[in-house]
Amino acid sequence: MTGLGIFQALTRSDRIQAATQASLEAEAEKLVDAIRDAAPEDSGALRDSIRQEPGDEPLSVVVTAGGTPETARGDGLDTALMTEFGTSRSEARPFFYPTLEAMRDKIKANIDSVMDDAKGE
Image (tube, rainbow, N blue to C red):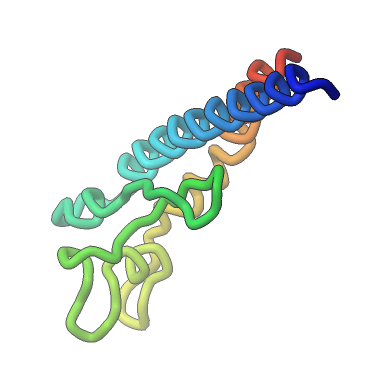
């Protein structure tokens, strides 16, 4: 591969990576919105805690709920976990995982489509 060919390959790789990252973030934001819509309406702290964050690895995004001062309890438990899975005193009211499962295939298809477009396929 000539010097120009290597440059073009790197440019293409960078373009694919940038498009994929943008797609991951856009899909994560759609998921965040859907999970917020599915969350119980209690105080709003749970809904407000649902967010996306950068992942630890390249091309990764984390969607999470809870883990904020507003959802943490003094006993080390978090409202998000207790709501999703229930406790010995309250029924589970799943909002996170059912929403993720319902959207999983569409999210993957959307990201795959963006990657294919970026590759020029």
